Image (cartoon, rainbow, N blue to C red; front, top):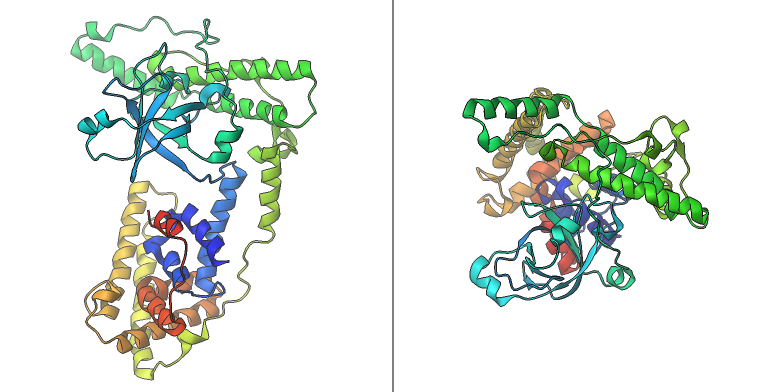
Length: 454
């Protein structure tokens, strides 16, 4: 059970503030511990949300920035992939989000290129594409380029074994979309004319947004769901749907570049769908149908998990942390805890959830400053347990006092979020106490631990 939770943690490490959940798991804190259970339930919820959207974690897969080979040595179907521990070699699948065409996924040969080291040195995490061939590989993948685009690379054996490559996306001879009047030659403009033109273009894009990208993608996915539905399509209907999907791909790629090309992009009515598969969560429900494709099966499976998700019916503190606290220590931290509640209330209440990301960052920083203040009180002027000069026995007793006070408040309010205070302030001490009680920390696979920490 600990291992499966560790995998969930690895996939949702961004939700693990200060590596707290990972530290609790590796210290063998029981899964029944209320705060650990609460944090894991949030991560499992995010995991399920991703699964419902078709986001399935795949091993031996990477997301890297792409650029052109500066040496000119790579062949037409070769790439050079550099990771932390060196180069990949052998077959790889390469894809550029948000490609929709079946040929956007390429099977290429990852090759070690010694000449590249003289140019990039010890640089890591990148993929280099060849500069030879009739057409740029990047252009064949979602009409992308090398100006900072990120590429999905996989060396998963099962995917490679079952993958059947398709023809790359062909640039359409005739656009389905109407062009704007001829764009002015910017190099012929005077400075003030160029500034005015750029500002007008900005206002056009900012206040007259195009919905063609979202509409084309949604309709394409609805058609794809019907194609994936087993044995329910006649051959003629399948061909009609595939033709519409090809047209939607062309519109989609035109819409992605509309800001650069000046095209006015719209999705014709004959390409729109009347019903969407239920996994797309479209409103109203009357415009959806129950999907039986693989995407629909995943959606249904995750929906069934929701009824089994972790429920916090009762907050039960761990008895181990409720022992051995003298009254003077409880009185001392009772004053600090009441003071903390007031300070944290002000820190959280200063910014609403609808505020800008900048204001939320300020709020989070203020909250962290409050936490750090009480860490320094506990650890004697430092923020880390291992850096403290205080006797461990004193720290352990005060950590227990913090735990007892916060969990008493959580039980009184029937709100598990009150349990966060002891773990965010005294989490290192509490985990070390439990390790000493159990003997050894929980051992997990090194790759899982390493990826969780990244």
